[in-house]
Every structure is written in structure tokens, then in C-alpha cells.
Amino acid sequence: MRQPIDRITLKGFKSIRDLEDFPLKSLNILIGANGTGKSNFVSFFTFLREAVEGRLGPYVDIRGGADGHLHMGPKITALMAAGLRFHSFVYELVLASTVKNTFAFVEERAGYYRSTEASWAKGSIRQGRNESVVGESVLKACSKDAGLPEMTRQVCKDIYDSISGCIVYHLHDTSDTAGIRRSGSVRDNEYLRPDAGNLAAFLLMLHDRHQSTYEKIRDTVRLAAPFFDDFKFRPRPSNGDTTLQLEWTQKDSDYPFLVTQLSDGTLRFVALTTALLQPSPPSTILLDEPELGLHPYALNLLAGLLKKAATQTQVIVSTQSAPLLDNFEAEDVIVVERKDGESTFERLSSEKLHEWLKDYSLGELWEKNVLGGRP
Image (cartoon, rainbow, N blue to C red; front, top):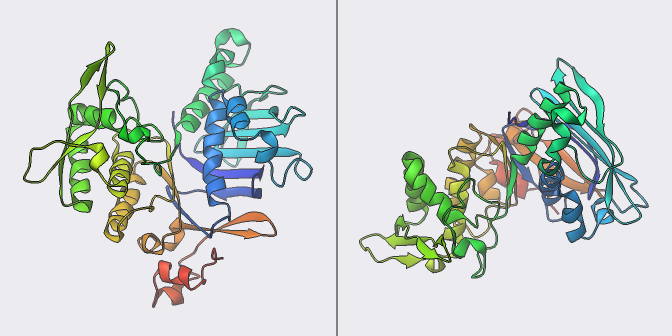
């Protein structure tokens, strides 16, 4: 049972020293200067997803070890702690850095949430281990023969479904060697990968099984790129498999252009549109600076896509674009600042900004440093 996140607590993670019980809505737009911690907040969800997938060790090792994930390093921060409250259940973990520069679970707790208190599922479900009990790679631990109560097994499944459904889409790399421009297996279409490396196969699946969604994606791309007509799919057999590279046609022509002949901005917009209009979205979609390389008109289209997606799932976006910010309400916006070496988070209020908003847009107020979050 996938659920969005209602509140988050995060302590000791990179620049975030103490974020306590912070509320998240269906739409959350993070603004702030470079280095304030927006990307750190977004990256935590990849960190958490790898943890519940049972891959925390390799993930942390590749990124320099546990010490580099602790606020101001291990001499200042001994433990990293996080807590997520969903609509009907909660998940908490406490991690410690070891002498081998890895993380060990000091505590991991899961429970169903009722009223104002959590009804814990038999307290802790993991202590002193290097990987989460919730992870799919250790899902046996939640089976009936593992000795865990039935409620614990069920809440583990609910938490796994919700956290594994938090996908951070990294769509910045549209270089010649990026997966999004290369051929891939036509069978790789179960979900849109975080780097959209299977964009061609996913769009073909939508074309065959979700025609109305496919047409919305195609028509939205046409608005941003008036020269574009449609995608073209020509799977090719290769080594016993079938490969596919995205192709497209231009208006008034049937000549098939390769994906390598799409500009970076156009290709990135195609991927963003597909991610935000997909018929079965993740429980939470996260995007870090999706405005990169987009035309101002495309930014307005992107804002509409973000709002539409937020009616189906939870959306968290970090941005430095004042024109993009102009499309949202004050309550959608979270200002991230760096004070005394740590990130702070504050949601805006239209009531407090009432007089300012009579004459200025949110983007203008941000540029004037009325909202904060500026260098």
C-alpha cells in the first residue's frame, strides 16, 4: 500500500542537522541559493530508497563512505536519524558510522499510526546490522518463519512499497553517451527509470497500452517544440533480444530522425513530461532543478505538469528559477537557507505575504530577497 509522506524528521544528514517533524504536502517547491541544502534534501530519498532495498552499504561506499553523509563529519555528528510519517504508518531509523566508514543500524522501527500516537509493531525490528530489514533483498526476514509478528510483517511491506516508490529523477545528463540517447531492451518498460534510460521502451509501452496518456505526452511535447510531430518506434532484433532507440518525426515529413538529433532541452522536456504524466506514478516524484535547459514557455508548461502530477501523487521539486516559481501558491513553496553551517526549511504563507503579493509575484519577491533563500 503506497502512501505519500505527511511529515519528515531528518537529523545529522549532510547539511541538515535538525529538521524536526516537517510537514510535506502533495506539492512541495524548494527554493534557495546554491549550497543551501536543497539537493541534500532530495538526495536523502535516494539514500533511503537504497536502504530499504537492502543496498545501503554499496551505495554509501561508492559515495565516499558513511562519514561523508554525517553533518560536519563524525567528530561533530555521531548518529544520523530519520523518521517518516505516512497517512497510516510510521518508519524510523538511527544509523551510526563504524570504524570501517560504513553505517550500522542502531535502531529501526515501524508501526501503524493511529490518532496522535504511533501504535508500534512490536518495537524495534532491527538493531546492529548493516542493512534494513525492510529491504527486498532481505524480505525473507518478514516471512512467517522469521519469528516476526504478523503486524510487523505487514507494516514492513507497506513501508517498503511507499519508500521504494520514492523516485528521484536525474534527467540532467543528455550527453551523447547518456542512456536516454542509446538503444535499450524493448522489454525494459515496467517503470520509467530515474535517468530515463529506458524512455523509448516506456513510451512504446504507453503507446500500446495507454493510448490516451501517450497522446497527452505527444501533444504536450508539441506545445514546447512546434516542429515535433510524433515518436517512431522500430524495434530491432539483437543477440536474441529486441533493442529500441527512440526516433521521431517532424511535422510535414515522414523522415525518421534519431534521438541524437533532438536538442538537450527538448529531450529533457520529453523525459519530464513522461515522468509527470505516467499513468501509474511513484508514491513520490522528486526532481532536482528540472528547469535546466528549458525555454521560458516550456517552464510554464512544466509548472502545469507539476500541478497535474500533484493531484495523483506527491511531488517534491528543488529549483532556482524565478519564472517557474511564479506559477505556484505561497503555501507550495519551502525556502531553504544555510545558517551557521546548517540547512533550515520554512514553508511560505500567503497570509504573511498578503501585502507584498498585491504588487509582486513570488518570483519577483524571491529576486528581491523578500522571501529569503538568496545568497
